[in-house]
Length: 262
Image 1 (cartoon, rainbow, N blue to C red):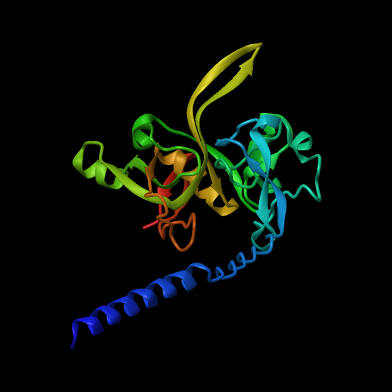
Image 2: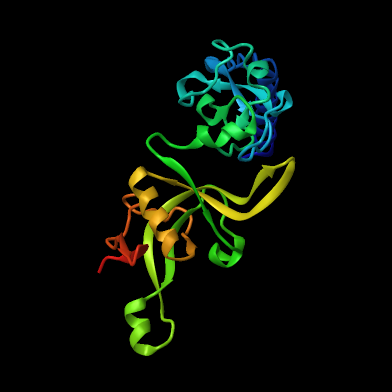
């Protein structure tokens, strides 16, 4: 190729590149993409929730409650709705908490009771059950670590005359009474006498059905009761079920004696 042809080819190539660059600089920009459509707003309802952790027996104040938006599709069962009870905060102030409620958890009327504290126990007993107090000591309550709403097994310790007489010394036996019993309260009971308060001693208040009340009352006649703490969530198929051992009252020489059925 001749030198003149090479020069001419180079000039043509440079001119073509310049023309292409010039055309591309004047090309219109692509139209902007439309913004994605916003999701439709979620339908919500104002629900009354606890503003702080509320323990068993706490007295509600207005500052302990607040309204919080809650999706209508997931409203908790029994929730207090502002649309239905707009004055619920004032209405429920001074109520007593009958079941622990965590901060942010919806409040429910069945977990609250209006009135003074003495009426609280009667309100928390389940239908068909009874509240029974039994004498206990730290040694008989897992070192004092048993708390309200725990579940326990009950045992009774007593002397066994059939084994004591032949041996000439006291022989004690421990028998199971009830298992998986709900503890309603635990602490000291006080009784007012002549304006003074008398400490009767530590007691545990248990939730029992009428038949179990009789079993526990008879067991207390035999000897001291011990409450054995169960692991949290470790529940029997039948709560509060009694063991297959029972007790009868036998009158000997005019005196009632509680004896275990064998």
